[in-house]
Length: 88
Image (cartoon, rainbow, N blue to C red; front, side):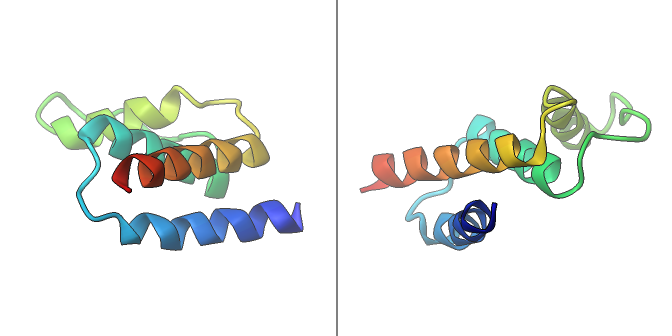
């Protein structure tokens, strides 16, 4: 788990090095995996229909409900690596 945590932290740094902004879908996937890995299952009320960004983030995170932290970390790392590969 220590290696996974180190890889997760490295991926957080690496994603900042992308030369272009990822798509909204990719950003939502990164957000959801990060939150699931660091916080756990989403809590609270789903944002209202006027908060489109908040609602999209909530929905993306909610899709990962029940996912273990280590699995979410791996998902985040894989997404960052695929973005880095596409960026080079």
